[in-house]
Image (cartoon, rainbow, N blue to C red):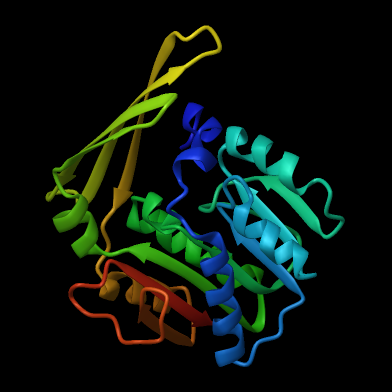
Length: 244
């Protein structure tokens, strides 16, 4: 879960193009002939995608497990009358409403590291979708987590922030462990250190499909990245479009 990192998230994650995410979701909705009014966004983070959806006039309900992320999201989103924010967990969220569309982006699904809990997540999604509703989400592929991120270390040195990102891939658990160490300069020019650990589960596509089927989804589509091309063994991100 994001804690202190939440305060730096938007500054450091400039490589994540939320407008591209938004435009891809619009293409998905058009391709699958969906015109949702009520959208639920799971693991909304600091509300970057939510802002695009809100500007477009959708009625948005969003939630995240991290209160630190939500405090930042609230400051961005409180100007919109069509956004409702909750502090909930994907595994056992309970909102007394059904939605036309449910979205989860930026490999949030990989953070559910237990297969039984991921099945619970998918069942929850199914229970919160209207008939013929659409579920749009993505995962970091097994290939990306094992062979690209793998056991590598990444460094970044910015004007006021220096951080290291050390990774370890556990082949027995199929999990990628991320060890992050930050040094952040304060107003006096001193550096403050903090550390965070994150874990993502590497799922094979077949595992995800099996769990979706167990959750009684009827139509399951998966694509390579931000496209409608068939995924391949070098796909780094896999997008799923699932119809209830």
